[in-house]
Image (cartoon, rainbow, N blue to C red):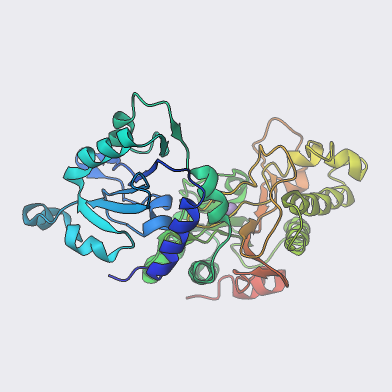
Amino acid sequence: MDLPFERSEYFNRQERLFAELPESSVLIIPANDIKIRSNDVGYPYRANSYMLYLCGWEEEEGIFVANNTSGNWETMLFVSPRDTKKEIWEGKRIGVEGAINWPVNSTDSIENAESYISVCISDSHNIFTRLGESSFIDNMLIDRDDISDPRGILDPMRRIKSPREIEHMQEAARIGTEAHIHAMKASFPGIGEWQIQSAVEGHFMNCMSRWSYPSIVGGADNGTILHYNTNMSIVNDGELVLVDAGCEVHGYASDITRTWPVNGKFTDPQREIYELVLKAELAGIEACQNGSTWVSIHTATSQALASGLIELGILDCTLEEAIGDPDKFDGPYRNFFMHGTGHFLGLDVHDVGGGREGDDDQGPILEPGMVLTVEPGLYFGGWRTDVQIPERYSGIGIRIEDDILITEDGPVVLSSSCPKEIHEIEMIVGAGV
Ligand SMILES: [Mn+2]
């Protein structure tokens, strides 16, 4: 099995992390616990992102341990040992001998992990791990109060993608883009949301990929529900469908949203809102400049959306009033755009490194190598009771989302081949597969 990165890249990540840790430290990264779905059947297993980042270990079970109690950093990977009787049922294992090809100093059976880690933690003054990931590790640390979360160091590292990471993300964006094009071509009035989902996810699987989050396929009013993923309704003639779907390549996510009329022709009200969201998205992408603040992207999309809502007569106020407190963005435009403009993207679809709502400052400064989404939307759910929805726009939910790489020369749209201009969409929807 080939690792998705050269061993040197993993060693480089480990060294940069270790350089930030004090003497007498132990770092413990356990694999995710297996979650039961039904009786003895587990949910599909997905490796812990920090495990993938530091050593690329993807098998169920596994503990990455690093310590510098001897003065030098030593890394150890505990894995499930070879066991023919279990492998007959569960599949072949890499095993202790095979795991030495992973970027660690040594490997051992997971059965020996407890005694090794016990010695490590009693010899160390600083324990770095994230509690709540593994009941096994949590139980071993129950009496310790000198535990620190290594994410404070790892997350800023993960925020800047290496050239090889960007290659994997470009590939995830390429597959995601093709999947959206397939779904557009396959659309027709009366199609089921699940059938569109099947076109999208079928393409992921065809490319040896899988979704990076449950696909959102919402027709008409369902498209106004931000995390709708029931995907069980029919999309009728004259209705829009909002598809928010992305896939993973070596753990790296794409996250793309497109909205199109299933009959291939926007109505005037749909076109008015679509053009506004697209304008806001392009303004947000343009704001993705090296050295800019995170919040400047949200400011750009918010100003475009708010002024458009005023022009369309949906809001009757000044731009300042529409946006509200410029630090809080709490004006009435939020009735129709109630989420953030984007998030970092990487090994987690909502990747680590800040930039999420709740940050109290201007957010991270954009730097080359960061990858983030820009995804403004407008939602006019006819079912809403909290706000007056204009009849003309009732049932319209539109979001447009692309994956953006920050470079010294400006934003690079990794999902740029995914159609989003109205004339492109009208040409491709229903073209058949
Ligand atoms: Mn997103």
